[in-house]
Image 1 (cartoon, protein in one colour):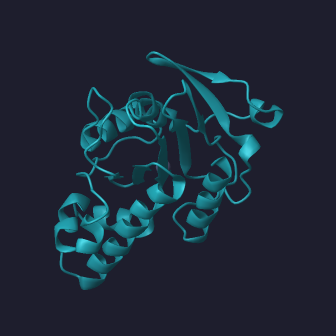
Image 2 (spheres, protein in one colour):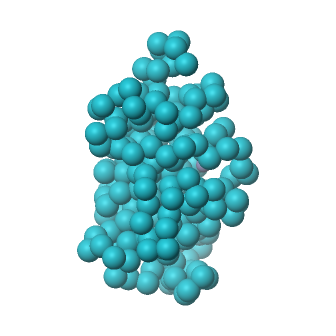
Image 3 (cartoon, rainbow, N blue to C red):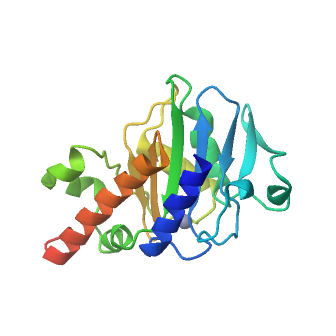
Length: 206
Ligand SMILES: [Zn+2]
């Protein structure tokens, strides 16, 4: 699935959802005490599976594990507090993988900038709410911070058993975080929300 994550990020780049070095993705198999995360500062158009970082979960702490020679010289994404918190807590009780995707889709960010809470628009659009549960926005928080991670956990309603109430959350002035059991499934939550945000902004009624 690391190859699929590379494809997802290439597609996100083509859609202008990220600039070259933006965006980050992590993946964990439910029964393993480690996950893989995209490296920091690497051009996502040319990202390769052997550049991913392998991260071990030790209780409340994480540490880098040896993966490949190439990845040994790279750092994990700066958004690791977000990915670690979600990957540590989620997926313990289901027989599947968890993928966390963070990108900067244009119309989602524009809608939040215009004062729209993304959770409020899904009621009017069944093609969105049938498949994607949208959390209330996270407000202005610094990127690559524990505060960003904590507020995303709160808005997604991450509980003590590793369940979340939503599939996607918007971060005002920044981007979105989507979660599902494969890279493309997580990506589709973003695609659906982005499409509806474009429609809402085109309508001028908000
Ligand atoms: Zn970001």
